[in-house]
Length: 101
Image 1 (cartoon, helix red, strand yellow):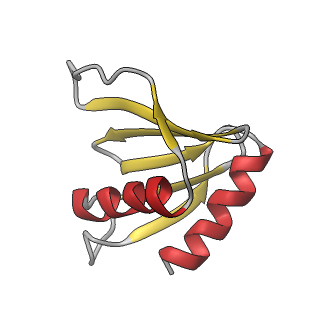
Image 2 (spheres, helix red, strand yellow):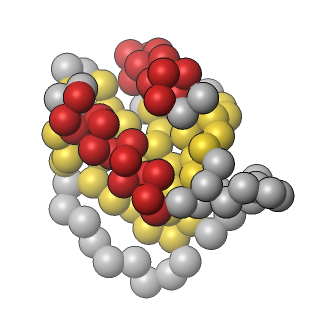
Image 3 (spheres, rainbow, N blue to C red):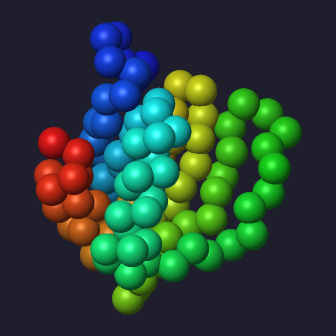
């Protein structure tokens, strides 16, 4: 899944749960997407951040109106935004088209 050419690339794929997942290896792009979710779309962060003891991490989720987008990092797919239900799946797909394509 690591990008061959552009490490700043943002990709979308279906995760194992069947919902949308946006991935990037760029911390700058991931921060930009997070700021868009909070300040343009009104998402809140939920859960305490725990420091990682391995090469992967789980960060606070974005929540809003029944939508929940989990966030994390691992060294195979980079920073992830993962939809957890139908509402967040539709939102994340439209978000990718509007802000990542």
